[in-house]
Image: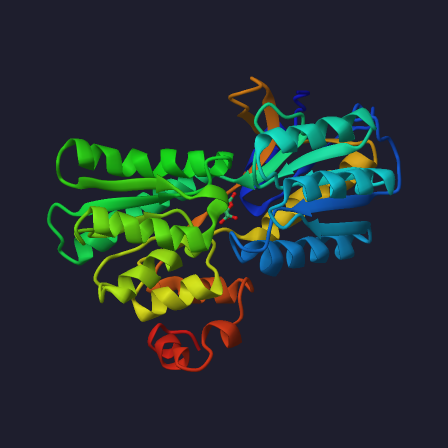
Length: 363
Ligand code: BGC
């Protein structure tokens, strides 16, 4: 990777999603000075509400502000459809392709094909292991998991639970982010299991982050643990809500803290009610803006120095990356997510939630 003298300035700008152009117009991406047209493939609309409610919206916002053509499609968790969409986008002449892979295998095939046709590529949110994307734009995902581990620990302490049994609902085994989230929460919780302060309960990964399957899995976990689960590390709000639905059936909701991620409307409402302990907010507007800036630069044949790389553990490559900072959200700061324009007060505070919003200082 070419390191420019502006590297330090770029690092300084990272928290706001800023990027510094290096003024390198050699166009080593093979896409010199084309009119930008950006294709985006989102993974599904069920594993998390974010893809349709946040990513699509903020990517559109960024592309419109930049005045570039774009095509955003959703593969709906279908790997064949994912590849078909990519083929169509390449044929239609996109200059850059941004993907959220469904797994590294199909992601890699799509990236390699795009590259062979001179189309610039970006891994958006999920790193494609062994892939060939020119950039990776995401959050610091290990920190996401660390915030979840710390959050669960804080909520268990607040409840005064001694030697809590903690169950894990991990994300999809084919999503590199799920691996990073787990590394993050393990860094906080494993020492507590080792010292016997906490007890490791059942642990399962949820295929494709399937929320419905997560409820079945959690019900089995609760049965296996004879109803004795004191805390649930759920890797996102959808999995957390699945666990909460089973806890409700067993009149345990509100007693057993559950974590989440994505600051979804549902997750925030679960926090306001007291059924969910915390979530992790990721400012997707910044993620979308950073990825859009890079895709446009690539189309113009520029190379931007992001000031940071991430090692692809499979391909061994140092992938130029933008990693944004996640934030833990508890009842007290649900208002920050609304103030940031990620969700609206109208959605979160609808109906019975109005009073809870007022109590949480959301005006
Ligand atoms: C994303 C999370 C999301 C999950 C399920 C992960 O790769 O980083 O924000 O909740 O996928 O879609």
